[in-house]
Image (cartoon, rainbow, N blue to C red):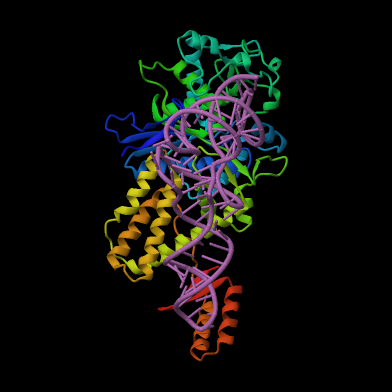
Length: 471
RNA sequence: GGCGGAGUAGCCAAGUGGUAAGGCAGGGCUCUGCAAAAGCCCCAUUCGUCGGUUCGAUUCCGACCUCCGCCUCCA
């Protein structure tokens, strides 16, 4: 069985083979957040996707170095810093902290390196210098430095690796009036933006005068600094394919001397976008959620993560409240089964049961087919439940099954539900209900059960006595 | 206009040239004082529409319809 991933460069599913000759180290770069506001659920779909890629690589035995940038200087950021009369550092620091709190709530593993654009000015400037030296970048009359796609192509480089481009047929100037720029060609993009009054004190010195870096260049500078000039995986949302990632390739392959056959990134992956309640997300129409909106509605990070994990990353996914309720119900079924296994398994340590792991691996090996993987998990749940009901599971078997689930959950990252301990008051009610049941005072015992329900607890009568569950 | 993706039960969602995984919701039964949980059973003769290829297509080909994404700083 081979581990295969879709590669945007070839538009096909390919066997994943790392650059490392030993086949062990994997360098992975993910385009991180622009910290100008709370991130929304669409952003988090992408981050959960990248988290699963990383976790599955680790599950497969690769030693992953995961780098995710923080874009902490950009047009919107600067505008808001001015509006709020604050400093760049203070403003971006707040949203970066909020982002990481959300990241934690969704149980995403932290990247090993979280580089910030503003902390990589020397690397950025040096990369632009290389491009200028090679004649691929030029300083325009407006003082900004641009990347010349014509010159780049003149060097024998290929622009348009991720998307099929036809500049003649493009609707130029749809979003940005082309006459605002003094670029040689509309497709050229900014590497260094000259300081303007609206920038306030957000600027850095450079050989081309004071200014700030363009957007794309930071990712080229930071990824190659932390992962080397060639690395295995680069991930992001589908909207980043063009121009962001295409420009990253151009900057990197234009500036750095790549030996024949070697390139900037071996494998590009892009996550598809999200619809909310069947509609495109729109801030102006209020069709979007931040994570805190959903937490405020009483959903947990793991429920949201679970829902985001139900669809394949390249398929458009419709995020709905109904879906969240469904995720909650299926998690409850899973938790119930795992909880029973845990009770039976005790502290026994045994190797994991292979059946589930084989089915799971088979599904995930095919470009992270999470739906098929869930299918395997729930078939396993049914089987475990059947054996538990028939009393056919020995302690070591339960421990082996539990261990298999734990391995699967290293990838899904759902963990256990938060069960806080019952208070003395609750325990007293449970005892009172037991006494009433013993005396066959069922009216009283049902009343106590309702009381417990109001306190947020469900009591289940099992062969081993009452069992409490959080509502 | 250019390029790309998708249409599978009430909802979400896999999949295959040989007759449709799984989850949620729903119905019946068993267990239970009653519940809950769990088990058992039922729940798409059908995969956007129309043609074509084939012994056979949801799966391949063509046309059409619908939805979605990118087209210069949006995950």
